[in-house]
Length: 140
Image (cartoon, rainbow, N blue to C red; front, side):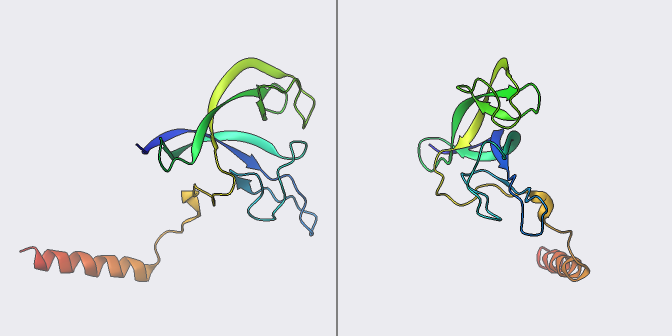
């Protein structure tokens, strides 16, 4: 059974350089950047985790559990098999942590940053008010 869960999800921050010389910096949870198309490269891409609502379970689950260690120097998340961080050469700490990673790299992005949505415009506020008055009139 599939269910929703709030859990630490691993994501990558693209380290590629755009044609204008600025870093891409796009966050993504697959094997390539959704903005510039750069394939994940452990030497230039950082990994971290953040709590997100995800689908887990037997059917329709997009994520599975994985063990990671954190680099003591740059705080990059590493597979437990890494002896040193591929980005900075730092040693990982001894503590392992559990994160959720996408289990199918071909699935489109499965999370949305809710901060990207703008506040309602004045016309949307007016629409909401007219809907409220409609509901008030018809609920009597």
